Image (cartoon, rainbow, N blue to C red; front, top):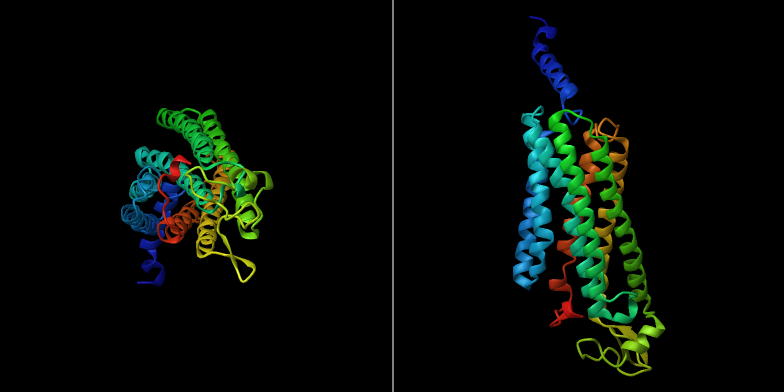
Length: 320
């Protein structure tokens, strides 16, 4: 028996895989190892956030990070299913719907945490009040979800009927671009707030407005001429308190997580713009490292920089 004969099973397996890739809705056969790894990582991070939410009574996690992570697990489970049955339409559609929508829930958590930081560190550093971040950006997230859901539904029907998915793809792309634009505005406002907190440069007109009392009736500055909230006088110098130092860590985590969501949004936009037969969508390596990995890093950043252990809660901050 020759070496060529020993290699026959391997060559037959490769030929079968190439044959399946030709007819696969992905343009390839998804890797089992990637599916298993992401299911495990997202599940573990989801449990961590459930524990943190219960421990520090951040119940909002159960309508933001938890459902978002559940969708990530479902989506990667669909890709793992496709690795074993690549020609089946159900797991393909399952992963499309779940993975394209899931990150919107992560965005909602970022908006909420920034609003919390504004309440804790000082309204005078931000152009928008905490309630406005929730009202404006969460509403925008819901709109983007609806648009993407409509596009995804139309794409699923078209795929099952074997008809053109071009129009549905454009709707999905519009939803992602809307979400990306919303995130860009959020990042700009958040960056402005972060820089002002670090440099201790509140807006002068807002400092005058809030120096007497906060919306919760708490003093924000020691006097009209004193340092803004989060700073104190020591030996004639204005220094940061521990609260504002921890707040900066929390803001860094939000900034990093938001950047990961933004990276993923850019990738998804280019992917859908190229269409279902485009280069990005038919090469799994890009999906693994530009969709899956950024979402893992985003969720991990939210766990490391968690308000539960970085800043004390103030009663009624959501009403600010």
